[in-house]
Length: 309
Image 1 (spheres, helix red, strand yellow):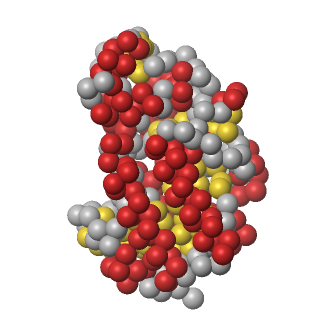
Image 2 (tube, one colour):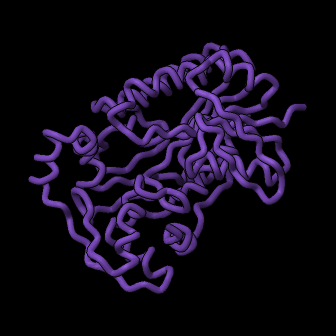
């Protein structure tokens, strides 16, 4: 039986997925535009330079694979409408042609604003902003194809990332370089709302778990995630994990972000998601933890990993 796995994307989740698979002895191929190399101490990980939106090339590469992982993460929100659809189509076609299960790294955007702020598996996708609607449509397309029997698909959703390699894309890690030097941490929208943070390592563990288990396919799962912290608490906990004192955490005035959003497209995109930061935003992973037999990494360990900037 094949044990060949194709990982699209070498960001923090894709890197961890590739290493975990290699460590257990699987054959792993990582696909990026530049052929990014991922090191593994236990087994060679093959790197391939390929445009993931090239469905013919990706389908050829996926022939004989048991699983295809969508770990792509276009960081520029302003390009999502152009970048995501061809990638999603290519991955879907590759899964259909090869028979490999398509395991997708998901986000919480499709849920949209949720009353009470707590998100659980099985709730409807009700996003109204274009990013959330796009990601919801991507899963709906896969779900329809899965139910029709043309492919096998599963998605694992996570909250804002913490952990190794997150860098400037994370709410905590974005301010860490300065905070580690004792400088004030400036955050967007709010610092005092309960918010869930998912370790990229735990997202990778959950993605591999569902890819391995046919009974989990065809639905959404949540990555194991600790109890929520405020952004100010998460920053302070991360600093404390490496023996650093807390720093002052300040919120960028809302009038400034609104004004910048009028002229800076990326800020405008962030403003569309302000509901995630100005009210409780809580990922409930209790069902997935119970069904998959997973638990989130200890919070203090996550903080120490996150402090490795």
